[in-house]
Every structure is written in structure tokens, then in C-alpha cells.
Length: 120
Image (tube, rainbow, N blue to C red):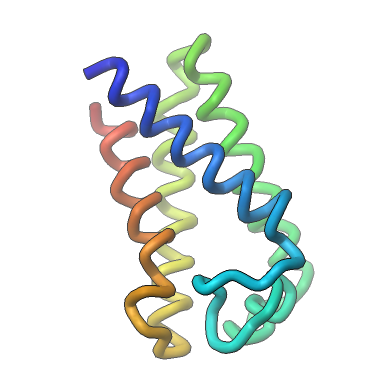
């Protein structure tokens, strides 16, 4: 079970880091509405650029904390719960703009994986 937990931690962390550091300015099939980058996506949701940077910063810190949790285990549960909470809001934003379910799959996946990590 411990190996599965570490794999899920890394999957969550690298998925978040990929979105916020590598694909931030690029289109993906999972962007809300017809957005082509993160700024447009937050605009689609009616959220400010300032909030985009706050959310992004939190997600990056939580992702890095999940990685650090491999060696410092008390960090895992709060980081996983925090990431799950932020991803619930991401899922709700997709619902708000009536996106097809496909666009919510990354958020749903991270919610599930981080919840398993937090509760195991």
C-alpha cells in the first residue's frame, strides 16, 4: 500500500506542476470553456488574474509538499487534503460554465488520488 500511496502522491504532484509550470500558457483539451491558456480559463470562470496566481501558487506549493512528503511524512495529509479541496473548486468551476465531463476528468482524478493519499 505504501508504494501505491507514493505513486499517487507523485502522480498528483507532477500533474499539477505540469499544468501550472509547463502548460500554463498553452491550450489543452481540459481548459474551461473555449480557453486557450490559464488566464483565459480563469476569465471564463469569472475569476480575477490575482486569484489565478494565488491558486496557482497554492497548487505548486502543495504539489511540492506532496513530493517532500515522501521523506517528511507528516506533510502528506495536509498537502493532500489541501490539493483535494482546491480541485473540488476546480471541478465546481467546470460545472459553473457547463463544460462537458471530459474537461473535468483531471480535476476528478486529482480529487480521487489526493483523497486516497490523505485518508490512507
